[in-house]
Length: 106
Length: 121
Image (cartoon, rainbow over all chains, first blue to last red; front, side, top):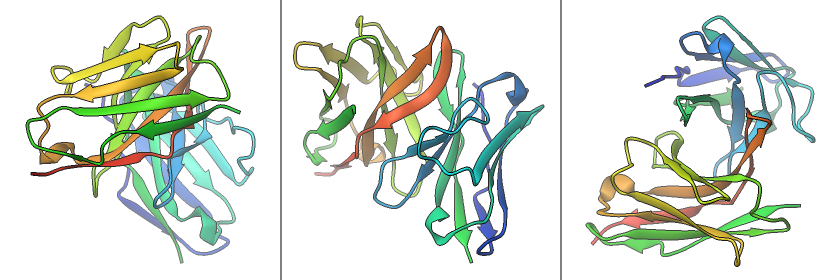
């Protein structure tokens, strides 16, 4: 089965840039979607198809995907960006999620 | 604006069947795939399975032997049944809408708020 690997945690200083990676075999050939989940809330789709933002998602969040790694970038990090972030792909007729990354804003 | 709301018992006894319903409001259940996802305490998201508005289903192989997802288009609802539950099935359960267009996946664009289910005697 397909596996997605994310770092358990990422820390970023207020106003700086955080990068969250999502590793998978030839993930660059797949559509990668990213979700943000804050405590007690449902996940929110923040990036779809590698680099597209749904309506209402700030431009500070961006995505890229190539080779064996997809990346979610949070620019000018704010306190409100503290959350768990998950990558997701469709593989072999299944949705697969990465293990999730906890982002802490210092 | 489409909204989803999960409902069902918050406590289930071991070996019994967990039953949840997701009610779709503000839009039709037709034309879409509808998923169930869960998040156990201290762990990440796990996709359980989905149902197409036609009634066809696909399940996560890790749960396939215990899962049934069904649809009631007249009530704009879809449901999850998970049999023979154990403490490992304790989780927050979410329903969500799959976003597909012309065979291309776009993720899960609408989610319910989630419902907490504990398995305990």
